[in-house]
Image 1 (cartoon, rainbow, N blue to C red):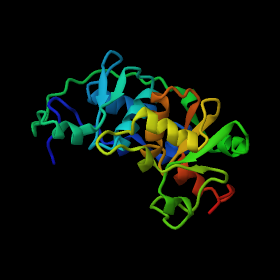
Image 2: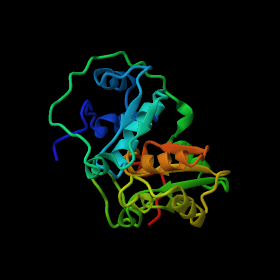
Image 3: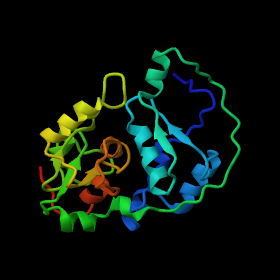
Image 4: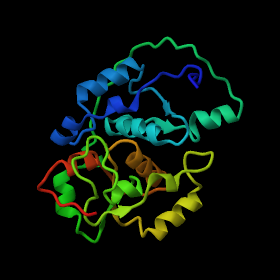
Length: 239
């Protein structure tokens, strides 16, 4: 379906991640690129942003995370995305809107992210939980995706595939269902939770969004994720 919600502008989430920048600074992408993309989308510090995708919330959570990381406070995710919007017979259009360019000023929030060195130094701590949100086959090393140099996972990482927190119609399961999932996985509010996936944006940011929504405070994103970790032969891998 090529239609969209009337007035919506398009930001392709994969333009918001750059591996070299993630390796160099931990930032999802270069500051100037972020300012250009969001300025061209008509976003400034006073803009209320509502992000949506086809419905599962993976891509929307990536845009949510990058905006949050670069200091934009007023950003939300539309629950159920375009799928639920259409199921409720709401209006849609194929007409692209006229976008007035604004000035987005990026203000990186370094406390939201961790680097590979931090992960390697802290992964054995009892108060730190590294959570891998990729598929089971990726986790055990059977599925090595483009951009990864090795299969497997960060030693000691907990596996919680993103699909298990996804609702049938809504982007997320109910708060009660999510709390049970997190409890069963021994994910607690007093633990430092580090999420990662393949590219550090999408599947892992969806889990981070769900945790934040439920009031978990100690949630960090390993932006380098498996692309970076697997590519460093000095770092250990489990299968």
